[in-house]
Image (cartoon, rainbow over all chains, first blue to last red; front, side, top):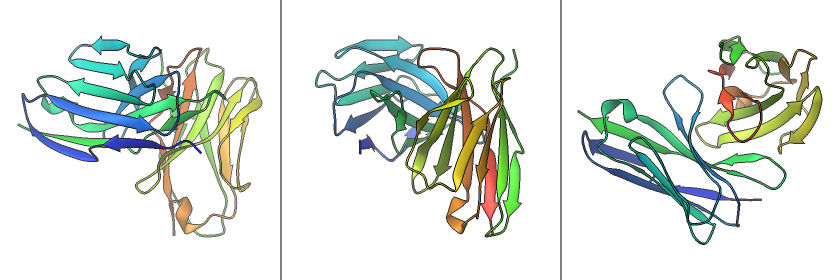
Amino acid sequence: GQQLNQSPQSMFIQEGEDVSMNCTSSSIFNTWLWYKQDPGEGPVLLIALYKAGELTSNGRLTAQFGITRKDSFLNISASIPSDVGIYFCALKTSYDKVIFGPGTSLSVIP
Amino acid sequence: KAGVTQTPRYLIKTRGQQVTLSCSPISGHRSVSWYQQTPGQGLQFLFEYFSETQRNKGNFPGRFSGRQFSNSRSEMNVSTLELGDSALYLCASRLAGDEQFFGPGTRLTVL
């Protein structure tokens, strides 16, 4: 089946630092999604990407759909304490299923 | 507008028992998906229902089943519980497109 890898697995950063994480797949897909899960809650969609090379921003978050269509990147600028959580990339398959990556756990040190 | 609600929020069962979890989607949303989240396996897709029909299914054994009612509310059932079924079960609803709205989940512990 499809495999999704995310790196890094976890990050500890100082407040104010920029963050970068990425996701790679074993196959080509047409839709990349980035979610964030706060402790004790369900994931929330941050950004959706539909075209190879597409760069989309949502406030301090920026995500890019890789040109090879097998990877995606999420950057967070000037991190703040409320950025803490688990960030998931996800793919939508041709059968309309959503497959989630293993997640990147982000901790922000004030 | 109320979000996705899941009941109960916490549940403790013993091996061999069965359990039913409930999900009420956002009003107007007809698609409901279920996911299992564990530390080891991450978020795994169980199934999706749309207009009372199962539209998609993940790779879970037949002990996991679901249904959707005419008001779009959905239930998920797990029979003959195993220790490995301990997980956070998340329900998500959507209207159209890719944005799924997740509920807070039901934390199931199997002893």
